[in-house]
Amino acid sequence: MTFQEKYGKILLPLITPYDEKEEVDYGQYEKLIDYVIEQDVCDSLIVTGTTGEASLLTFDERVKLMETAVKAAKGRKPVIAGTGCASTKETIALTKKAEELGIELALVVVPFYNKPTQEGIYNHYKKLAESTKIDILLYNIPIFVGVNLEPETVQKLAAIDNIVGIKDEAGINPTQVTDFFLATEKVDPDFVIFNGDDVMLLPTIVQGAMGIVSGGAHIFGHEIRAIFDAFAKGENEKAKELFVPIYRFCKACGQNGRLLPNSILRPAIELVTGVKLGPARSPLAPATEEEMNVVKGILKEIGKL
Image (cartoon, rainbow, N blue to C red):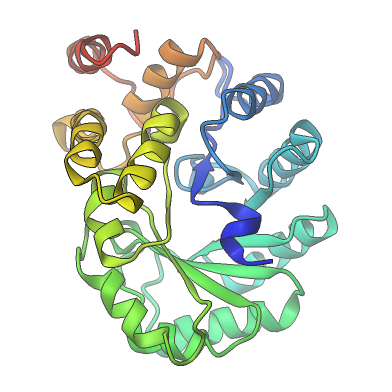
């Protein structure tokens, strides 16, 4: 079975709900999982990715969210574990927990805060791959990590059997999807390349991105699927028409210099889905009334509210 046959094209990084005390609300998490599965807005679920605010969660919270997702999904959609941590030791420990739960794919971000060298990044992933039997999807997001996972390093990592692909934050370097393809096509022709930035959906499809990791899929999953379908049929104008509202919405989630869109994305998802998510965990400041007015206006304009 190929990666796409198993996991599809739309991988949804689940938002993590909190209560009024900023404690994880596992009951609402189950409700959100039911919603996205029943609405069929994605092909696979990602637990504790960037959209799930992984860096603001404890180790135990991340494990419990994985347990909750596996239980709630009931085999209806594959569950992918976000297991990247700042240290190699903790990344290995969290990935092993995912493996124990029967999860077969881990999305692993480049170690953050430390700004490791390319050698350090390579050694990190090599040690991880040797410590687990599950497959690993590399995750490059230099805007938060501080370093880029270079194509030459990805080329070396692609030679490791259970490193199967990469998710790239393509907005930082819009042509790097092509660089990753050229670097890996001879090493592993089945190496998968996913775009991880909603506003880069259409540009990266053209470059050959095989799918998207999309927080916006909570709201726009059907439209994203329609864009893939339209592009496959050569209906470029239709693909563009469907893409523009997603682009506008995602740009609005980054108002006032917000690099992580969660503070605005969370209440927007709550409005559309009806699932209570609560505000983002501190230190992320909550959305302002002015910011939400802009987002609500877009959602109403495109018929989501």
